Length: 284
Image 1: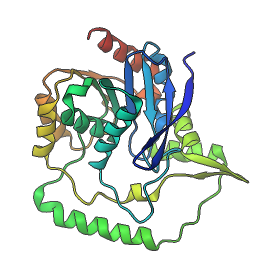
Image 2 (image 1 turned 90 degrees about the vertical axis):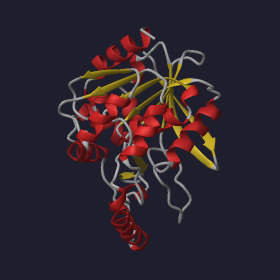
Image 3 (image 1 turned 180 degrees about the horizontal axis):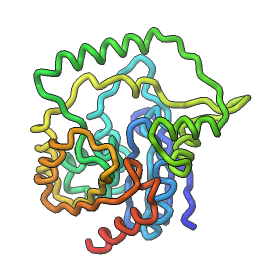
Image 4 (image 1 turned 45 degrees about the vertical axis):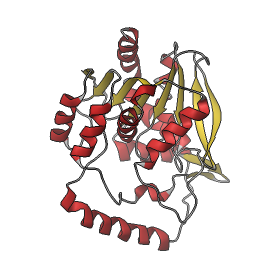
């Protein structure tokens, strides 16, 4: 069995937690998780990619990573810089980039920003981030600032629950099986005296202050030179589906495969997902 090793990656004054599978020196894969998830999202898939070195990172304030400094706000686009810094700290000049959902959005923009460093791109249930029309920007900013003020004034009372209850909460929140929810709940909580508490930075629930337009996202996609494997599910959650169809047409070298398993197909159907990914990688 390809077991995981916990590692710490220090960037920009932050200590990020990560899991590493495989042997250093094998082709490297940097894996990015989805919104409100964590590196545990790859617990069932990564061990099956045994010919590769897979590093799955907890974004700041998710899983076991440190949060951004209190009182600061971060934007989706900042995660691209974060990913590039992580790759630099790992010593990877060129690497395979994999992302799920929000992580797939970050991976898309990263691959369009530093195309010369991304050898292959694996996207699970996502191609680029959510977008918005230019005229919607004022309302988007108003809503975000309103939620930010509520976040600042709301008293924080960590709830103490049993781990099994946390698993059930994750199942219900994401329409997940117990198999899929357990690794997310285990890494999304920390032990305390009478059970566990959630360790998610609440700022992740504040709506974005600004979103890119579809035209801007297409500009990033047009810069991608790496072959792309896109895995989607007919029963998954792919917002702005019409916009996504346009994006598919802009990918120069796209392999699009539909699998069963819903939005978290890599957790619900890891064996078939791994087989599909390894077939794609073996052909490159």
